[in-house]
Image (cartoon, rainbow, N blue to C red; front, side):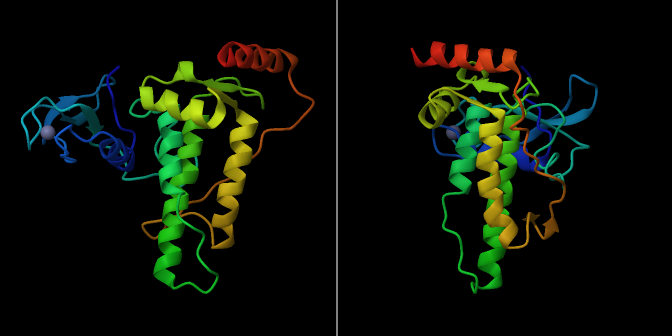
Length: 222
Ligand SMILES: [Zn+2]
């Protein structure tokens, strides 16, 4: 799979998660290239600028991508799922971003702005895990089989025993964004992030999806 960033911020998260073994966190300077869909892009690949070993995580950055999207549906890009981070890695990103404490009501403006920025990214990261779920019902699943990295599989296993479903992730996101809404809502680089974070169901349920979820759970927990 050719790894193509959907936004600049997605490429930054990817680079942050994939430094060179020598510790270098800056990828090799780009060369001009063309994305599979024909868009001109910058291709970051080649020897590490610090140790000259091959860069571990090459990726393309199309010239027309925005720095970040200003809605919940587009923050890290879209409409399809990421080709840079797998669904478990997005959970890992969420965990890293949301590890701080909730500021006091009377905290200074800079502290609150920093909190809103971190939780905005964390909330959008959960949306990225959700994007890997193809079944639109509340029981639509994401499993370790959807992950292509060991650390993605490890995170999904540690947090959810290897699989989780749409409604459960949405409920988690509800809790995360609830604290954000108390401080004025999504905000990133002084731009408000708009749009809805909706919950699917719980409705009467879809038996086929429910049965699939139970079967997957049994298989993965064996
Ligand atoms: Zn290196």
